[in-house]
Image 1 (cartoon, helix red, strand yellow):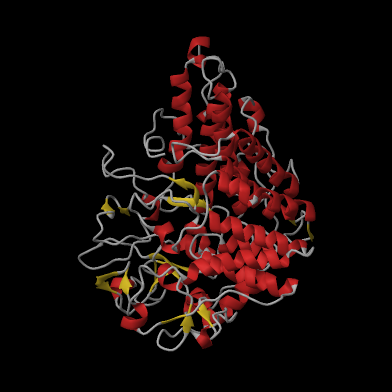
Image 2 (cartoon, rainbow, N blue to C red; image 1 turned 120 degrees about the vertical axis):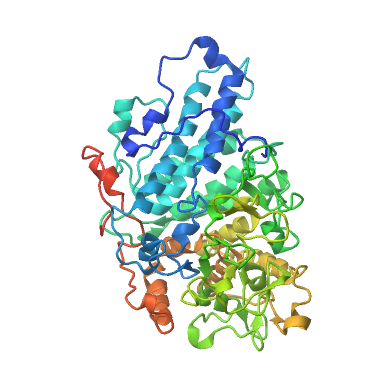
Length: 576
């Protein structure tokens, strides 16, 4: 949708101090004539504004891709110049020193509720629009409910006990009296699912504007919502997984049916790397179910680039001066790509067995995900990576790896210098590979005789990985690496299949900001991250005092400013 998400048609963004007063972002009731309400052009402007905010309101410190908050996982280090460079994110990566007054915790809350507010503004007017003069009414309502659900989904991942601003007809006073504990955790996920369900029921299979969600995108997000919902956390005093609900898992299976995806023309890219290329011929490809749309050369200053990745660019002397080198792949994640002689994961990621490119087998996706010393950065031999300050502003404190999924070749013409570095490369929110893995996970957890089907789905991903070598076809001969990734061909127990699924999600979706949320959803965060901290402390002093506290660090606290402005209607998350 390169003609929708780029220009704010109406200036509606008021940075409010609390969700309780975010209705200020709404158009005041009673100020529009009947003619204005029915004017398709006016309604379209509000719809466009609701899309545009997802590009214009995100920030290098509050990226809607969630990379800033994925530093809590074992996939990535914060990076930057040191622990004081973005110190509030350092607190997140070591799970220590997090305070409810931290600006980053409040900032993301505000930005996401402002996005929801834009959708509600459009919905309030769409409800009053005459369908005879605006035949797209139901579809536009579906799009706005999709955007609203997207905002609530991200908020719930981060904060768990959130306010649901999903009634666009509430008065200011009614908004100010909303509570964040009106619904149970399970009921909250259902509220989000209800919006996505409406979108699924009313969206077309395809859209000419690529930034508009399709029926398959709504199905994928429904599946994702029900997958999170399935892992019930019913006790309000902790975040323990109390049960895994079979009905929710069946919903995941229902909404990941291949026929739904095929109707929209979706499937796996032939090469994994195609998902992370900025060239127009690769963007909005067959695997991209829904993506944030960015642009360049569109008549605006520097284009509507993705500036929210501005902190991630490495600081290459004379090339990307000013690059901040944040969000660096961890050694632990790199190790996860190692394979045995049969091409299967080693299931051992700790530093006493770090990946050695001269002797170890590795999944080819490693070289499409992580830039490493001794290899060309973004496949350009003009920029050979090394253990120097060009590839680590912290001089090795955060290692010398660089994420490839977020960056582009400096010589490609797709790297733009503004206040920070940006590029027009889309950010894929939902991709088909995730759909396959969500379906596989549901089938494994149901454990009703369909584990073989789940393994077949995992094998689809691994088969694609094996053939994803177009950009790295010379790596074995020129750099001495050993590609080896194969499918699974045995019979597996539920426990074995679940381990395979969890590893596949990690290597397929590495550095796409799902890892921490996956660990929380599975109930694995406490064990996995504390083991990770202990192991990292052997080589990196910043983890010497790191400790993940169960029933606290799974979620962020509600911001202090929100609690204090809520008139007693908000309850803080447990542990805080």
